[in-house]
Image (cartoon, rainbow over all chains, first blue to last red; front, side, top):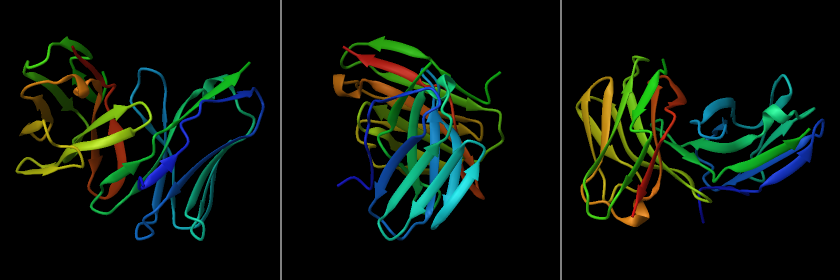
Length: 110
Length: 112
């Protein structure tokens, strides 16, 4: 079992939809989670990070961690074509080593 | 100019050839990383370095070697390339007190 599991998609939604992207993790010892966004032919860029349980909101984006189910989620409200990208969840595992999920490809259709 | 620069951006080579991918950064970060990205597998850590005298293996270091020539330069070598090393390779940096990774734009390597 991979330490961080993520459905690779692709996920296709119409513009304006609410998008839910999800990952599961296996190692409960580390509670620092991140979401990176990767546009085509570019390197990933940090989108959001959260620590332990709860929600963190930044504009149209909300990151959520559920420790009891070992589930991390990213919600995108009012999705836009410019949100079309690959979204990678990640868990920092101490010593600043980061484990990534496989990434979910998202397409937002105008 | 990009803060993390990788060269070459694209390379096609043959089995058995020696290949070097280079990374330089202007961010002033001590920590540098090499990742490999494959479809369905995500990013996997090859090697990392927390300063010039510190080199560590990641989860998939076999077949690869690295050199940290200076704080700003970290190169990845494939001594004898094989087709299953065909992938997108990313260099990244981070600061000591923040886990955020800053990635280059990637080097696409094809081994025939």
